[in-house]
Length: 163
Length: 117
Image 1 (cartoon, rainbow over the protein chains, first blue to last red):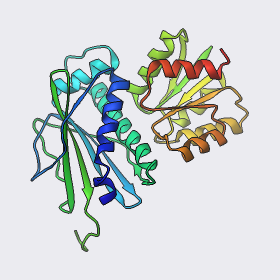
Image 2 (image 1 turned 180 degrees about the vertical axis):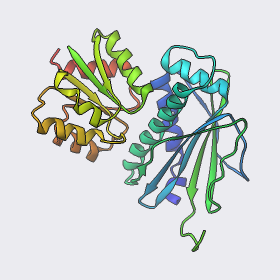
Image 3 (image 1 turned 90 degrees about the horizontal axis):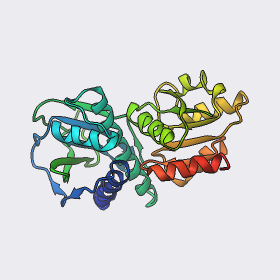
């Protein structure tokens, strides 16, 4: 947990470089804050788990429909009118690259973990409920006129039986 | 020249294929995992493959393709960018390595390099 908390900037750094290289977009990344309760935000989320070497958690990239469509347009060079499988795959791949790149940055600090395959959650203004013993850090970001959110949920350590 | 692009993400396959076509490589085939790629690899003169995929991952695909005598260049395009992972891929028959995220010029440069252009 401490290893990841002390290196939260690596997730933000990875997000910035991914957006710059894959989208050709400069992103605005705000200061991380610890989330209180379960934050409802956006219409689409790409969620990936990671774990190993004393660090485990979940990374979520959360978008409004307009932001997800804007991201797809920036990445693929074509615009769509509504979110469908292409947009789901696109935000999942971006989340995969952001976490994969963060994994490489952590590995350079001798912190190693594996990552899962992305899952997409869809629904207006949805919230994502992590397990009770997880701390959730919000890293708001934006591109063009869009506001988005990266959530990093981190395990807090040993879990009681049955939790 | 036929190029085979292997990635479970349709988004990434399209980005790579668009990059290849813009660079003049217009004869492109694609596969969504290593198993599907094994059925197409013999016709390819260059392969770009992801590492982490369902059904059959990219490293297993490379080992299987090399094991059956495929000797054309293979480039791994993946988020697995740690030094030990790069070394493992190179040891098992990958000719070069592109870490995601990447820029299109970097991809074209790597392709031209493995083809000796």
